[in-house]
Amino acid sequence: MSRTPFCPESERPGVIPVVHPDRPGYNIRVTSLSQTLRRIPSVSQVLLRDPVRTLLEQHPRHLVVEEIQSLLEELRTSIQQKNWSEKDFEKEFQHLDLRIRQRLDERLLPSLRRVVNASGVLIHTNIGRAPISEAASRAIAETAGSYSNLEFDLAGGKRGHRDQHFEARMVRLLGCEAATVCNNNAAAIFLVLDTFSQGKKVLVSRGELIEIGGSFRLPAILEKSGARLKEVGTTNKTRTADYEAEVDEETALILRVHPSNFKIVGFAQRPALADLVELAQKRNLILVKDAGSGYLFSTPHPSLRSEPTVKSALSQGVDLVCFSGDKLMGGPQAGIIVGKKKLVEAIRRNPLMRAFRVDKCTHAALEHTLIEYEKGTYSSTLPVYRMLSARTEDLRLRAQGLNDQLDPAVFEGEIRDGVSLIGGGAAPGEPIPTCVLAILSHQLSAQALERKLREHAQPVIARIEGDRLLLDFRTVFPEEDEVLLAALTSRAVSKPGQ
Image 1 (cartoon, helix red, strand yellow):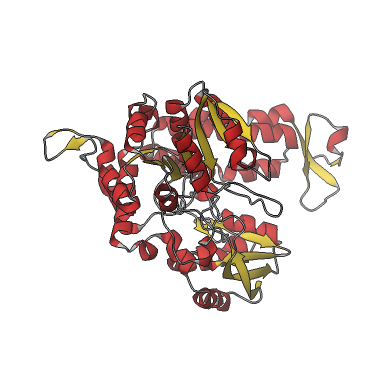
Image 2 (image 1 turned 45 degrees about the vertical axis):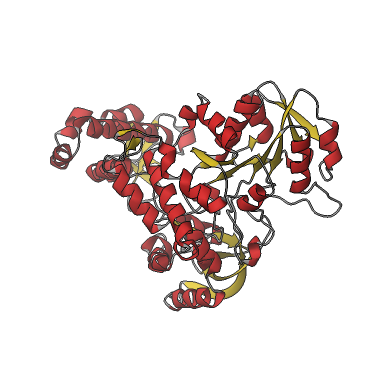
């Protein structure tokens, strides 16, 4: 066997050097790129391998074939780009069957999964907003797996309306005349505008022209609905007179918008809601309040002391109030519209309502959420309120319990006082005292540790401050403490690279 001095890849295009195992400076054989590529087996050859035949018994043939084709193409590209050695080739194809199985398992694994929220943001928009109650979860499972009386009047034996399952409860809770529901609050606002202000002016304060998550802007909703936006006042100061000055025969309604994820402080002013009610009644306009967060009525929690409630807006005479179901209300994703009966009925008759309506699972979860409010048990059964009311002392004990189980040779943990946030546009900037476990890994950077936890079998969402990873126990369910421990003691985290 001849020995050829090692030649860098850049000097021998199209040639794969295979290095002698005992003589790093020499090659034991030089194989052309085309020869290596020809050694890649065909799909039909791979299908004849015994482990792959087993996979064919477990999965549809087309899935197995697709993954084999995809894997072989990736290997072909890698060979061309990286100039594989003989050793690389043998190593890769030695585990070919295992890689096919892994790819099939990954393909059939649901991408929508439960995660542990250790971020400290209670209503986290990117991970599903407010978790629903156990009763609502059970209702979804029962309703989804069977037939239901979604649009069937059991008493009369004829067709019913799906709003019947929640409207009466909402009316009793809020003291409004009527209520309807669509798939989210943006849709609720759109339906209101489309129903009452096509081609007409809608008055909105410049300080309320908000952008919500995903670069979704209120002016865009107005434009698509066919309404004409008329900005009033300035960014920091808007007075009742600013609205009144713009009212004419082309004006349909006044829209008061929840400020959502920001506050305007300092030299700022906006009219009291009661003043806008008086103006709307005097000029025969519809007053619509976007109460975004879905805070139905006041609770004693200090972080919510400034959050406007739906019930208060209705009691002051607002014609329609729109809000989300999956924020402070603690229910499923929904856009809820409550207020004057004749206006709600007009929205129900809008042909677009059918495009925006919610399904039986949402109705089931929504009704069971409202039942918790009617029973007066919502503060203990809805997760968002349980998290809000959790005592910092109890969170500290849980954080310490986890820290005590970590290997000091791998982690350095510190119990700290911290701040949680409500999120979801509710009570912006209002801090909630909490307790966090600040972790310093001796083997991974904070960024690498955060990534490893996200990639765990049950992903963990945390946050970083400085060189430490922070786990906020206010947003972690007590039964998930064991999941945190499993993630931190997994091989990928405690023994990286092995």
